[in-house]
Image (cartoon, rainbow, N blue to C red; front, side, top):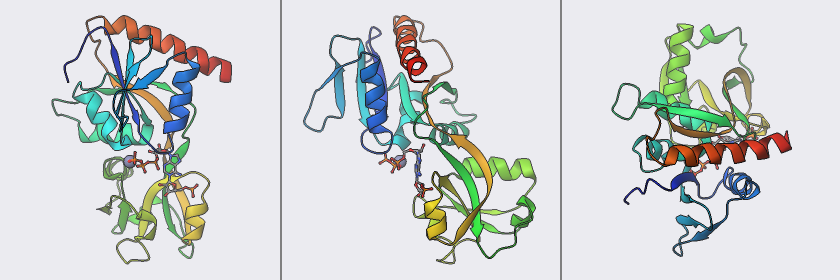
Length: 226
Ligand code: PRT
Ligand code: ZN
C-alpha cells in the first residue's frame, strides 16, 4: 500500500474486547468510515482524512513500527511487550501517546491457592508460563529472580494443571478466571488499558497536523467522559 502524506492510517482490533469501544471513541470524536471490501479490513474515512485498518491486536505495534500504519489503538500490555521485543532493532521507537480509559486489566503473577506465598523470590528456580515473555523477563531481571519462562500463545491459566509450569503471568480483570483455575494473584507487573500508540518521531509531512487535530478531538471526548 502506498502511503499518502495527507491521510492518517489508524490500526485497530478487528474483533475483540477493544473493537467496539475503539469504534465508539472514533465515532464520538466525529470520525465516520465506509468499508472498502466485504471483509471490511480497510475502512476509508468519510469526510475526514483518517482511514482504518482492522487487524488482530497483536499485529498493531508492528504495523506502526514498520510505517504501514501511523497510529494504533491497542492494549498497553501488547504495546509494551512488542516495544521490548523490538528494542535495539531498526523498528524500535514505539510510544504511548494517550491512555484511552477502556480495556482496563493488569498483567499479574498467579500461583496455586495452596502455595504459601512469601514474595517474588519464591519463584527462584521455578517455571512461569506466559504470553508476555518480554515483560516477564524484564520483571524477573529487575527483581533478580532466576526463573524459567515458558512462552505460550494462549490457555496460560491451565499450564500449571498440565504440569508445564509452577506459576503463570497473565492478564486479569475480574479475577474470575484465576478463581476458576484454583489460582491466586500475587504480584501486579503492569496496569493496562487501551492506549493510542505511534512512533516517537514526527512524520515530517502533512500527517503531523492531522495527528494534532486527531489528538485534540480524542482528548475532547476523553474530557467529556471523565
Ligand atoms: O483476535 P485478537 O488477537 O485481536 O484478540 P485477542 O483474543 O488477543 O484479544 P482480546 O480481545 O481478548 O483482548 C484485547 C485486549 O483487551 C488485551 O490485549 C488487553 O489489553 C485487554 N483486556 C482487558 C483483556 C482483558 N481485559 C482480559 N480479561 N484481555 C484479555 N483478558 C483475558 C485474560 O487473558 C484471561 O484469560 O480474560 C481472562 C481473565 O479475565 P477475568 O475477568 O476472568 O480476570
Ligand atoms: Zn491478540
